[in-house]
Image (cartoon, rainbow, N blue to C red):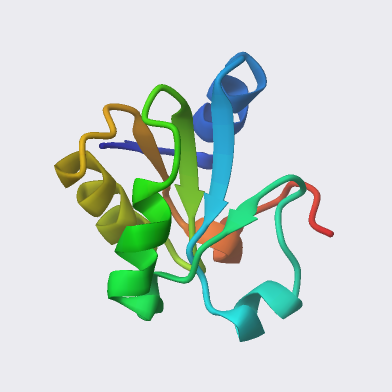
Length: 102
């Protein structure tokens, strides 16, 4: 797992042909806006979250975010334990996000 600032996250994401954006917030939070092209899997779903993560391609690079950066950090750690080598946490999450949302 690697913590990235917003600038680092965006720059690395733009140059990554194997990038997947992962939103681990709740449905209510996602309803307020989501980063374009993000996959949503709520970390609060417990074992369902783990089951959904296990279906993802371990050869991809995951750019993970939540509201503040805390849950996404936890999600990255879980992903690392499941064998994902490249999970990047967005420091500050949506609270500090200045990019596009849909």
